[in-house]
Amino acid sequence: MTTKPCTICRGRVQEFHDFGMQPLSDAFRRPGDESQEYLFRLAVGMCLDCTMVQLMEEVDRDKMFHESYPFMSGGSAGMRAHFEGGATRFLENTTGRGDDFVVELGSNDGTMLSHLADAGMHHLGVEPSAGVARLAVEKGVRVLGDFFEEESAVRIRGEHGPATVIYAANTLCHIPYLDSVFAGVNELLAPDGIMVFEDPYFGDIVEKTSFDQIYDEHFYLFSARSVQELARRHGLELVDVERLPVHGGEVRYTLARSGAREVSDAVTVMIAAEERSGLTEPATLEAFSHRVSDIRRDLDAALTELRAQGLTVVGYGATAKSATVLNMCGIGPDLIPRIFDNTPAKQGLLTPGSRIPVVDSADFPDPYPDVAVLFAWNHAREITARETGFLDAGGRWLLYVPRVHEM
Ligand code: SAM
Ligand code: TMP
Ligand code: ZN
Image 1: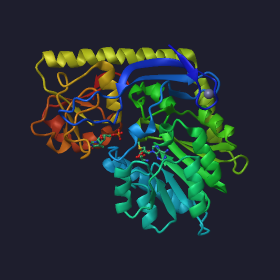
Image 2: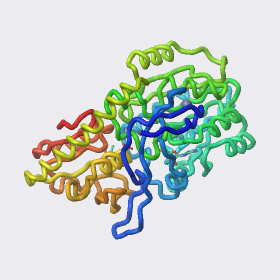
Image 3: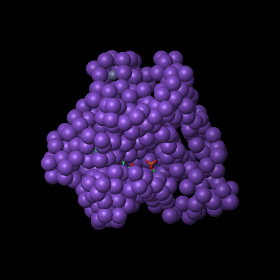
Image 4: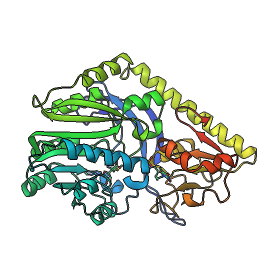
C-alpha cells in the first residue's frame, strides 16, 4: 500500500484499498472497436492530516468530461423529483431582493436549473460536457460550456455579478483541483452568499460497504470533518449538513464565508458521530477493505453457481459504479451476457473493460431472465416498482451491497 501527497493539505495520504487496473467508468465502447482502452490504477486512501478520502491516481478531466459524456441526471424519476425539490427550496429561500443569482456547477442536462429558468430566476449552469449541456439549453437553461475553476469564475463574476447561491450535485467530488474551484468560489460568491453541494457520503460508503461508489470520477469521498477542514482552508465555514437518501446516501453541505452565518448544531452532531463510529480510524478502513474482498469472492461464487445451474443472468443499470465491480471481479459476457439500461447514449455499446453489451431496458421482459444483478441498486425502489412483472414471472434480483444477497 503506497502513500501520496494530499491534494487538499499536502499531508500524507495512506492507501487503504486497491481495486487494480480499471478503465474509465463511463467510457462505453463501440462493438468491434479493438483499440487499446485507457486504464489506470484505481486505489483509494485517506489523508492522515485532514482526513480527506481520495483516489491515489488522478485521471485527466478531458478524458472523462467531453462531448459524449453519457450520464444524464434526468434518467431517473427519483432524481428528477429530488432536483425539483432542491429547486423549490432555492426559489423559496433566496434573498427575494430580486438580485439573486444561482450558479450550478455540473448542471448536466438541466434537470435542476430548468425549474429556475421556468420561474424566471437569474441562473447559470457551468457544464464542460457539451452533449448533455445542449440538452439543458434546449430546456431554456443558460449554460457556460466550461470547467468551473478560478479562471472561469472570474469571467462569470465579470459578466453576471456575484452569485447568491453556488450549487453542485455529484460534481464537487469529481474535481481533484479543488484549490482552484474554491479560489473561484471566493471570487464569485456574494458576501452573504452560500455554497451548497451534495455528494456521496463516506459514512454511508463504509456503513453499507458501497465500494462501487469508488471510481475514476469520484475523486473525493467527503465526510463532514474533511469538508469542514477543506472549507476552513479557503476562508469558508461549514454551516449546515443534511443527510440525503439519494444515490445510496449523500450529505448536502452548506458553506458560507467565515463568520457570516450561524453554524447549525447538525454540523457538530455529524462530526461527533463520525468520531464515535471511528470513521477515520485505520482499523475501520482495513475492515472495509476486507469486506470488499469478501464481496468480490461471494459475487464470483454466486455468478459461477448460477451459470452452472444453467440459469440466465443479466445486469440492470449500466452505472458508472458497475465498472468498479465488474472489472474488480473480472466479470464479462460469459457470466453476464447483457446489461439493461434506459440511457440512449449507452445502448448499443459495450461496458468499459468488461465489454458487456448494453441494451434498452424496454426489452427486459422479452423474455424475462432468471436472475438480474441490480447494478443500479441506488434506484432499487424505482426499478423494482416498475419491473413487478419480473418477480411475478419468478425472476430474482441479486445485489452485492452491503453484501451479496437476493432481494
Ligand atoms: N449535477 C448532475 C446530477 O447530480 O445528476 C450531474 C452530475 S454528473 C455525475 C457530474 C457532472 O459534472 C458532469 O456533467 C460533468 O461534465 C460535470 N463536471 C465535471 N467537472 C466539472 C467542473 N470543473 N465544473 C463544472 N462541471 C463539471
Ligand atoms: P446512477 O446510479 O449513476 O444514477 O446510474 C443509473 C443508471 O441506471 C443509468 O445508466 C440509468 C439506469 N437506469 C435504468 O436503466 N432504469 C431506471 O429505471 C433507472 C432509475 C436508471
Ligand atoms: Zn490532507
